[in-house]
Amino acid sequence: MDQVIDVLTASISSGEWPPGHRLPAVTELAVELDVGRSTVREAVQALAHRGLLEVAQGRGTFVADPGSGAWTLRLRRSEALDVYEARRGPEIEAARLAALRRTDDDLAAIEAAIADRRAARTCGAIGEWASADLALHRAVVAATQNPVLLRLFDALADGVQDVFHHQSADPGSGVDTAADHDALVDAIARRDPEAAARATRSYLDACEGEIRSLLADGAGDTA
Image 1: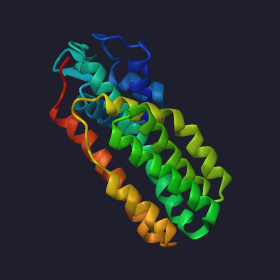
Image 2 (image 1 turned 180 degrees about the vertical axis):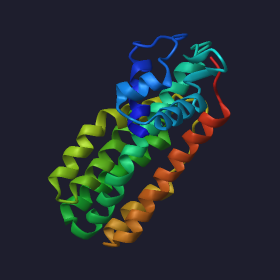
Image 3 (image 1 turned 120 degrees about the vertical axis):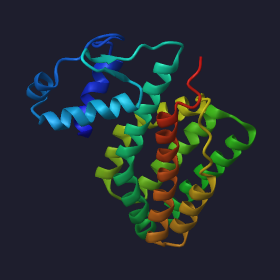
């Protein structure tokens, strides 16, 4: 279902399906995407729940009207959720491997990045904070000594950075994961793979949970 959601979301965000556009019938989409009709229905329901689609009984399914900025905000939150879901597996495993394999130089890079992150957060420098946060997570992945994981992270990096910037400007967001990030660095320093994985899972859970909550209740969806 996730792949179908990605395809439908891309059609909306690219402008291929503008606001008010009526989606093809479920049967037609199922054939086009080579999936079952139930998978299409579930994907449409998920996007309707996120506010990107509107289901009009007897009339069909339509791309939601942007209105007063609410649609754009929901689209960004939807895309942010996709990025966090994509990060989950690689980053949890990277945290575990980093704790097992990190060198002293790796640890120094990780500690420098989290120090920059703390400093930027303290002075409210959002751009610097986003860059430091990305540098921290990349340093953790680099400490795995696994070049495939590092290439995977770099492939996601643009999306991750976009999410950071969008969340900093999102009136509904504000989850604080500083303690989890501190716990991650501490676990890597102590070479405790399970604690490192647990800390990573905790901050990803918190961020995903916040976005799901905002999508569900529409908090902050104002111009």
